[in-house]
Image: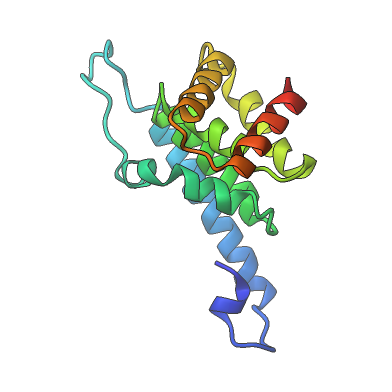
Length: 163
């Protein structure tokens, strides 16, 4: 949340509070990472993968998370990017291609576009055929007419830049 929402104008958050919050968010992301990577799978002796309620609730909000991450605000975007990566792995096989589509469609410059390439770099090792799946999502969205002409132009320009 922006500091302007948390504190009244002219006030500042004490450094100790900011550091404690940073640490808390880092620990929460670490815990989510453990839950995502240790949740079992279809062939595991524990049965089907266990749901992670927080990530289940975020599944329908990938676009909003991408929008927030692309604001590149302080440390927030790093946490949001990490959360986006965990959500992409958790929501396999569709989570990662959807996240890449949104980042590619929304990025307005090289710095923002770098978030898409970084997400791909993080996920490529664990998710096979990610570029093809992301391209398929892009094509589906284009054919569905889901993008206004300026957004379509931005998506195509960003695809050309990362290709």
